[in-house]
Amino acid sequence: MTGGEPEPTVFLVGEHAIEVLGLDEIVRVLRHFGFDPLLARALDADARKRSADRGPSVDGEGEPAAVVVALHHAPVRPKGATRAQHPRLSNVDVLRAEERLRARVRTFNPVRSSVDEVEAWECVALALPDEAAALRADVERRRASYRTDERVRRVLSRGRRAKVELLDGGVVRKTYAEGFHSHLAREVAALQALGGHVDVVPDVLEVGPNWFTAPYYVNVLGDLGDLGREGKLLPLSVVRGMVAAVAELRALGYDVIDAKPHNFVLDPRHGLKMLDFEFAHRHAGPAPPLAQSWALIGPPADFEGDRPVGNLSYDFRWRPLTGMSPDDLVGASVWVQHGRRLQHRLRRITTGPNAPVRLAVRRGRRAARCGRRAVDQLHGWWARRRRVRA
Image (tube, rainbow, N blue to C red; front, side):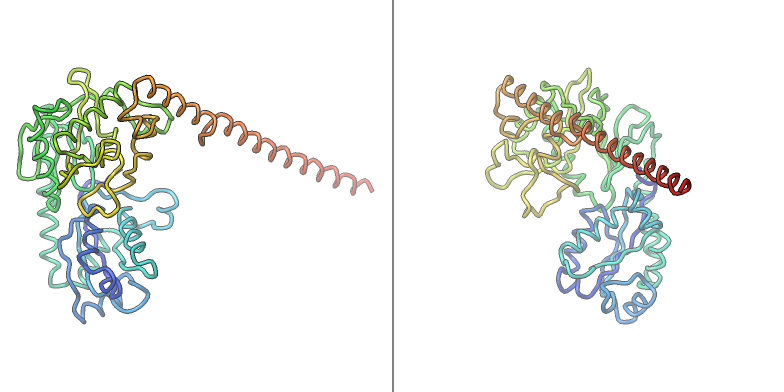
């Protein structure tokens, strides 16, 4: 689960990281993982020494060269082994951002980060003592602006850039963090341009300084994450409706990068609706063919615009719930699609990780190991008895 209040994090950036990546690129990576920078600057000589002596170590060599103070609006504590390894860490996105930056440089650790809010303010006191009061005030102001001033019936989602809530009046409000108002503007512009023209697009009811409201839709599809884990497919009629929506939006010039099945709802009264247009993209030139549209397969690796965090491939987002290839999804007849889905189910039953045959083999191996242990124990008991009698 995500935490309640937005949380500050301090990143101390090493000298080598500035030389190899540059501070702007480091900030761009942090923003990708939902960190809203409040301040990013080089450190003077005194601040470098203070941070090197008592702050988190950077690089293994030299002193920290720069600092980034950022606010994250959906901190999530790590679980399992990660939590055991980092017991104080209050936001797993800190690790994800560090890992992404480390992968860019490979030979050294480019940043070191505060593990929780207490340590964040300790780092600020070391590196930026004259800025501490102003930064605390800025954090509190941003927290206040992110709070909802109406009665909330239910929190529907809390993401890195925005939260979605069902208000008492029966409407949905999506509120964006201050540093991500460009995403708000992009989503509202797409909804207002398409609403009323494309059936799957919700209407915008009202727009505020950092939020907009839209109708609330009941979703009879349930939790698609559970559906995928159970190996079940969406009804073919629903899948075809999703693809038709992607094709219609593409014909109007929109390629919605985050148009995965999980961002559709099926309302008994209003039908299929598509949510989350904050990554609606307009191609400068001709759009790729529908089967290669970014809504289905994700943008290319060299795309420099905003993209969601995580695996955007077709095989990860679409295939587990559709049971067919992109080409079959957009071009095959209904009967061919039924055949492809049957093949997908048969493969899963016979060769998938939880296929009955594999489960039976695993159970057989476990039984064999238990049998061998029992035989070894019995032989040991018999040998001991024989020695005693001798």
